[in-house]
Length: 218
Length: 218
Image (cartoon, rainbow over all chains, first blue to last red; front, side, top):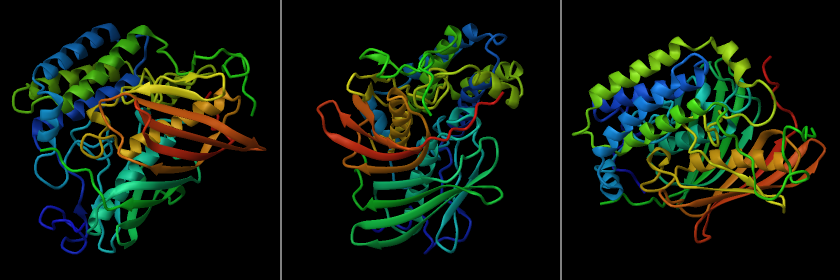
């Protein structure tokens, strides 16, 4: 479908460098999520023999209890989190409200592609010192969805064909890029890649998206 | 390569139902990580207007500070986390020591495939109420690696070809399966799928792995 251009910036109506990934709707949610992301990372970094993990388990469970006490039921929360149109902050790749997301921040370029730079740490590890192949797939799948929107289209992933050219390093800046190549009827073809800072190609993807989205809950 | 059968259970030496995914090496790490996973979920569930997110941000940052104070440098930590052979607990799909992992628990079957059941919640959301396509890719990529090991082989992902047949629901049990189909020289072909509890096929994958692993840091 053609996207409502008021809600969705695209290469047709927005300048080069437009940030396409969401910001936290609520500053305190963004701060708490950033802190949770730091805990997730630090739990993998810390020395198991000297950190007081029993105490921390108790504190984290008390925090979770407080948050859960204030949680609406799942159906109500789903409606609330999908309220309105446009980018939301809760996806696992770019979402500032999702502690699983690195988060990847993507900008739109005037030639039609989108790109972002990200460094990944211990939580995203597959082979020793390197990014998990499935994490690269997650970042690329999401980037292509954003690239499609930047080109003025949207759709659900139908096929991903991913090639791993070399191990993708942790702890250094990676560039993630994507762009819509062509669309015909309901079919959208997009490509993307992950490269190291010195330009080495680590992962590439070719994807087919179909213009058929899951409706937002109301 | 052929895997050391002492360290790696396989269909050739271990019974049907063998659990192939790791348990936390340290009980307190497992407890703290499970609590962090609960916080990550609850942050997406909670009502932004009534939970005390400013206080929680402060508490989470203090927890992270404590863990970071006890963290060795990155190179030292990498050596420690990859010490020994066999499954480790820190990957983002099945790792009990990684709060990003759901975690998926996989068992080996005597016919050669591996499978596990998992329910996914808000942190893994893509389309409204459904699993992010990239999260499905992460679970399948990892499952195929475990399936290869169960068949007595190991390798790095070279190609993933993933098809999305229908949206994959959140909040209900999903079955993730994988198996090695054939291997010839350094090439390993594997397939996998994700189905709902009533057997509907959501995602399928065909993959090529190459027997060339990243060495463990020493």
